[in-house]
Amino acid sequence: MGARQRRVVAATVTATMLALAAPAAAHVKVSGTDTTQGGFGVLTFRVPTESATASTTGLLITLPADHPIISVTAQDKPGWIVTVTHKTLPAPQKDDDGNEVSDYIASVEWKAAPGSRGIAPNLFDTFSIAAGPLPKASSITLPTAQTYSDGMVVNWNETTTAGGPAPEHPAPVLTLTATGSDASQPTATAPPAGGATPSWLPITALVVALFAVVLGVANLAVARRKG
Image (tube, rainbow, N blue to C red; front, side, top):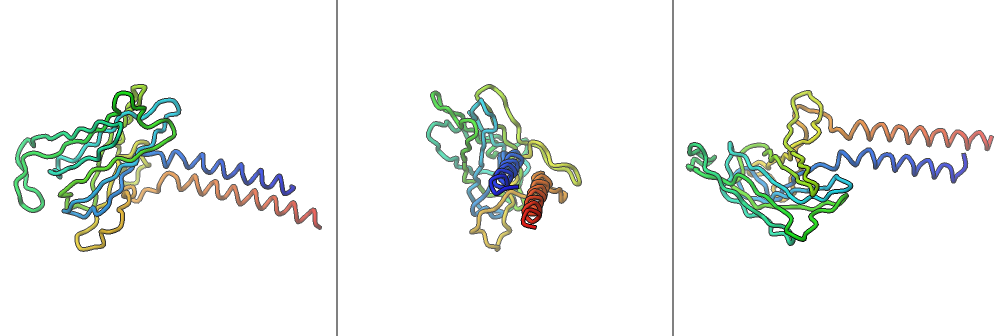
């Protein structure tokens, strides 16, 4: 196998790796800045358009009623109309500090304004909210509905069961920083529950192994030619 052939094989394997890894990375995800338990922080949602023909024209984020968040300021984005919806709780609740809460922020929605194309195919955008007080819990789940220009709605609302497979449309989950720890670093999305292996790991391992085999065959061919 000549040098040119080896380069072609390597390029092919690399392209295959990227193609296989892309679906795993194309989920709606959330990350946080200063998102401490019981505090106020900024939650940023990364929204990719997976469709090859339709644009993302709507994003609806649902906030939890069991841990009501009473203050939310949504990001103002050019080309988008944002709506913050309040709801009254069926019965007043005590927040984590013992204060009585009767209403909360139920959802935040962005819709592409008339004349705006939204998020075009194969592109992504980010949407942020400043929210608090955040639950005094290790994480918060934020089901999100993504609407496309062709009318399709993708509900990112599935959760992982212990020992079960990774869901196709996982709900964005944000890990909250414990009070008193270093909250200056962005908080990553929580790993799947129950210790489930992320869906991209077996694929990546398989592709890396394939790449190693191809290089080994190429080196063996070179060694035999020199011999």
